[in-house]
Image (cartoon, rainbow, N blue to C red; front, side, top):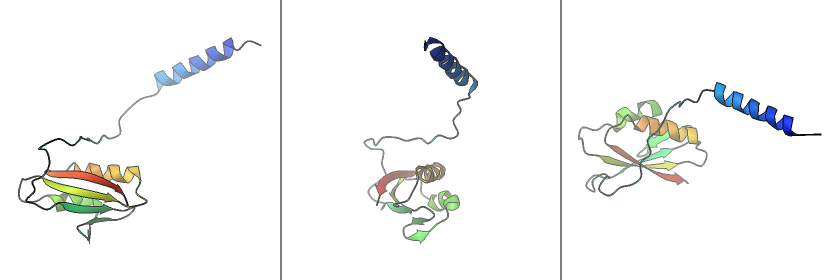
Length: 116
């Protein structure tokens, strides 16, 4: 029994599905590497954000994720660093949602610390 025809059929199916599917980006989050001189000034203390599976606390106060960008906008235009601590059950989608919200807050330089 020859497998040549089976391989041809599989290749044609693979080719068909690759050509008929659409590849679109749902959203993208800009991730930048740390660079010298790109951080916040040492005069202002960093903000501390704790991201949980269903809660967000900013400097110990509960904040809704939808209004976080408005809370973070300050009067001065100087960049401020934001330390983001992840809870034990935070998903990648939850972190992506947070980074999408932080994109709307100008002057905020987030640093993700990791799960604790």
